[in-house]
Every structure is written in C-alpha cells, then in structure tokens.
Image (cartoon, rainbow, N blue to C red; front, side, top):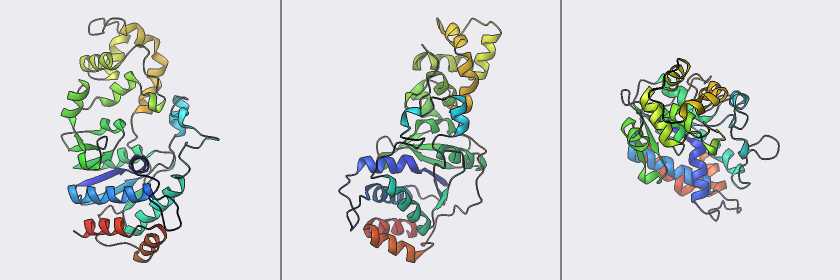
Length: 299
C-alpha cells in the first residue's frame, strides 16, 4: 500500500496543535517538527504502508490557477507574493525537509505545483491501494473505491482519522462518490478564494450534481435549453456564472500530470544518513520523536 502525506497540511496542524514551548536546546520552537515526526510514526505503526511519500508545495499558489481565478488564495498572501506563514513556523520547514531526507522518506515536489497536485499525479500513476493523509477536503475528489483510493482525513486528529471513501462522500454531501470536484466548483470555497456560483449553496450544488452526474453534463443541458432537473432559479444563476464555470474546473481539480522526478518510495528500514540524523536530533532536541519514528519503521 502506498501512503501519500499532504505534508504542509500535517505540519500546519502540528504547529497549531502543539505549544511553542516545545523547543530546541537553544530555545527555538520545534513544535511543528516534533509533531510531524510523531504523526508519521503513528501512521506507519497503525497502517503499515509498504511505500511512503511526503509531498510538498513547490508553489502554494500556482500561476495557472491564479491566471484563471485571481482571487485564488489571495487572502493568504503576505507582503510580496509569499504565503502568510507564522514567523516561528518558517524556519521549522527546512528542518522538516532535512529530517525527512536523513531518514530516507521520499520528499516530492514539482515546480509550479502544489502538494495536492503531486498527490494527484502519484495517485494517477498508482494502481492502488493508496491512502492519502490530509486535512484538506479538496483531495476528497480522488477517492475511488475500485482501485481503491481513500483519504485519511485528519480533522479529528491522527489517532482518530476519518476514512473517506465514496460512501463517506455520498453520505456527507449527498452526491455521487467521485463527484466532489464538481460539487466544490459549484459551491465554492472561501478558504481558497473560490467564489462558486452566486446563490448556489451546498444543497443546490448537491441536487444539481446528483441530477446531471457531472458539471459538463449540467452545462450541456443548460446550453440545450433543458428545464427539468434544475432547482428553482438555478438555471439563471448558472448562466450568469458562465465565465467562472469555464475556468473553475481547471483550478479546482488537482493535476494528474505534474512533472515529478523518479523516486524510490519504499519505506526505509534504516536511516539514509545516520550522521545527519544524529546532528539534527542533537541540534533540535528530537531524540525521543526520532527514536519513535525509527522504531515504527523497523517494526
């Protein structure tokens, strides 16, 4: 089984879930580093993947998405065009990368793409099974019972993961299990700066996707003048949102063709660089979490 980590989602969760009083010997906060290491150890122990990849954001706000919808993640922009990240988290990200490299856990990113796109590309290449660990609902669009591809959703914590499959998506949103991307396009997502179709909320979006099966079929019916199956007022709203609907699917759907380097995703049985790992443990006070991770990997 291949396990794919939405690493930014996990280290943000660790940063905000653990106190900054967790520090290195010199007083630097290492709460995100420590939390992520313990998360990976728990995931390996509980789910026993054969292969593991930590995906990263090479570009958290890709140009192709911003060109299509300029508001995409615009509210998260700090000075310049950088992502607004807490000052005490920024230096921890490079430590996380060094730790992953020293342990030997594959760390993958693609220029101009987000971690979601790396996950989408690896998932498209993989016959399954695949478990995707994330706190991002956008990745619900990848669930596929036939292969199978599941999302292990972290909203309730790493030790209480919600298993998201097609049945979960249907029960939660009232839509076909693989229709989450079309549903999200219609509904919009303020957290990503996606406006959605004005006046179309979750219930109407679910009714439309369920009735027509896909956004493409829905828009074809609209063009053909079909009336049946459109909730009251929704035809007018969809017609008014034509410009948005022409570009939004390319923004909402994760890429399946991001340019990724060849990488060995095999779960490491021993550290790739023991010397570097000892140095990182000493410099950052990570002996205990790293020992737990190494025990999980060798166990």
